[in-house]
Image 1 (cartoon, rainbow, N blue to C red):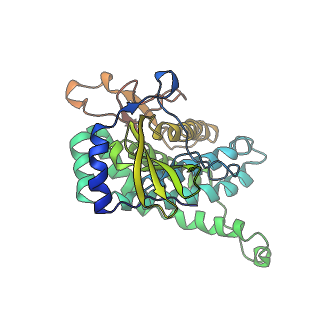
Image 2: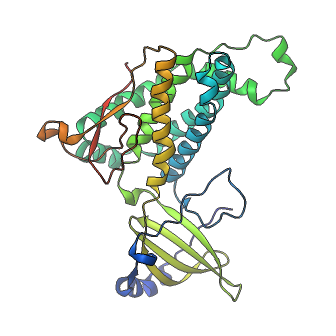
Length: 314
């Protein structure tokens, strides 16, 4: 179930004084509040998790989910005996990732987003984003991947015995996978207020009001009281909370490491994805944070500013 809050003008006029004078709480022990990210394929009843509240956040979460699906087939891909079947099976999550990232590019294809990339992203990241986005849109191999994906999805289709199934090469899968990973990692670095999160907490004892939390700008989490239809009635509390994007980084970064391992295993000519700390660049190039990957281990953005160093060739 998708949750939303409805704010009307009168409600905001009443709540603004409360918001401006409301104390801000920390989690027990003084740390950040960390309720986690919703797992799309997880167990039922996990409603106490952050869910995406706008298109940008939604596509980023779906991209991380596609990464988890890619990781599921890694062992089979690395084994030459099962590699062909694994390549075909990976067409499903890779095709989904392509669709998600292309939608992500559409969501951020406006003047304000371009200004942010031009003014606050490191030059290498900005140029790489433009180059890789252009390449992903033009990649004709998507048709072959989609054709195989559709055949797998229709596994009881009798035409599979008469129609020749497209034979995918490792690079057919790995090239768009690498491009998608680069764009996902860079997209994480838009300002935190561009990502909107919502978390249903539960019903009040009167069974007539909901408790819902939102995060519109890290690190502030606001707990609202609404009616059963989502109309906001009051503010309950404000807390400092961890940025949910950090949890999305884990599967994305792990998939980057896997991508580097796979191109090495199949002797691909595709270049690995590397990240280098901005402190290793010229002073004039140290402009802003970017997601990292180095030697197979993820680095949190808060630890060090980083910049995309190398991507697959044009």
